[in-house]
Length: 433
Image (cartoon, rainbow, N blue to C red; front, side, top):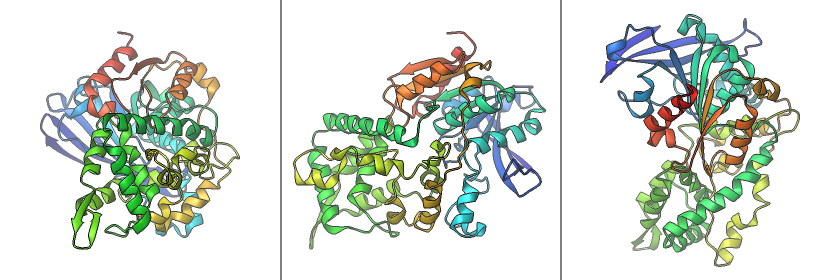
């Protein structure tokens, strides 16, 4: 079923597709995918090549644009765009604490979600591509985790691609989730230090908030159990272009005087709840380490285990001394499944995924070394979420890949300066730069 309607400058068509839950069992259970087709209003009948967009995450649906916003405006000059909600996200058979019990208990839920990684997403793309394009190849634009999917696409089904554009999403081709986090914690420390250099007054503010939380153990509206570790995880903000400023403004109004003494303000508590809850994208937490799973070695809560190797992140030791409190980001840990009411029902499911030992490999170095698909990738210098050195190593391993390495943007460069970033990548893709 399709529904077509208009926004300023564009014609939109909502499309739904049926795909196998398990692509190795095409006659078995099927799930629904949702995608939104976008074309310029003046070129609705034109024979344009296709660009399929894969959002970052995991666990996020495709961007909901209004008209020709951000990078979409640049893409529509050359392409008919398909904004795909990856399986389990957006309107594509959503997977969350409300729907997953339909699968059964935690074991059944974990087995179900094991089919929601990049390999299944790419096979979804190849299943719907003939219906969308009539069999023609398309170009994939992958942001962050979408870039991980694009890299798998190049490994598994390059025959479906006319080109690949990747922004902040070149994954390490080998290694374990432990290696990802051993590279990540030093970046988190650098981002924290850079924030405090910009806003030195936040050193004492952050320590004061952490001390208050440690003493009072507040529960936020909706039942979120606030811990110092949860407060530290606001460092996720520091991976975005305006994140340091947002963190500063959040901290400056943390406290309010009341008849009972100094307390965390209602506004601060609400902003914390909004920033920390995974209610809107639970698969980010449940599947985050699974996207790095490979071979027989479990991920086993890698971020939590590796954190112990970096004692400077221990809040108790920090508060016992006078050091600045370090923030963390892009690190899913077990305590989140106790703190967040949206994740509590999924804790055992997450435990089973963390213990899983049958993950297939996602990337084929030999096939990537022989790649013939034009590829261009934006790599952000000192990216908080995706290690720059890992990305550059992968860029060198993919034959013909051309890079745009920049320190002008953080990980959200495609969002904040989409036309510029995409235009640069298209120039590289077509050999114009």
